[in-house]
Length: 305
View: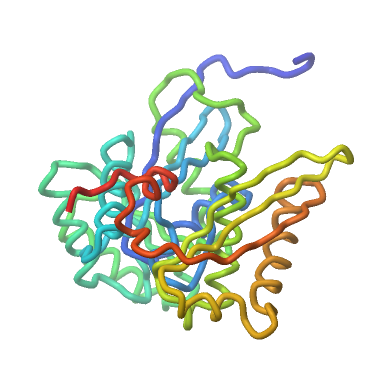
């Protein structure tokens, strides 16, 4: 690369973002990277697998691991998601515990802190949604958290507005170990395009139907064909667990699934930088939550029970 100056000393490390569902982890990840790499939805437990995203900060490459929300799992899929979250923490050089300022120090966050303490893990505290809470409340909340766990640092940010995020990224980068970069400097995520496309459609599905559609639905990209004109033809299947759920996704005269497809196609064209021909199908796959192959598709380990 002519004219480019490579840093004399490189830094690189893994940083895991953990927290309870809907604390804003995916929104924060997108803000840290500066691009859409994780889907965001008002539906809890939207992130199902560990997402790897890459941010450059000076001489440092930060490899962020956005994990599923940590909560008390009841079903097999939930157990797999929580297992993936803790696995991400185990693999990281640094852990960020993201807490919702509005929610405060609730029972779920206390459980996560207890698990961190019990395993001897070190972590930094990130208090999110500071734009929604008075400053005196924030200072009291930070003191409350730090009285229960020896956090290395405390950051106060708004993942939605970006307030405080750039400074946090700089401080994280400065503390990473010296070492070679693991990815090209212009790569934003370590996720196949087929999986990213399925995630984008799943996000649009949840945005349209999160009050109506049961949790047990998923999207898979089953066809990806490059066209001669530079566009791409993508075929995806929205899987639901029961026949009675299929009409919900289709909508009257197919209007709902058409709207989901239009929303997804527009965003995919922006992300991929080219024209997208998206075709959606809705199928019933009963008991997919007990199928090991589906877990492998999502990058999750299949819990035995």
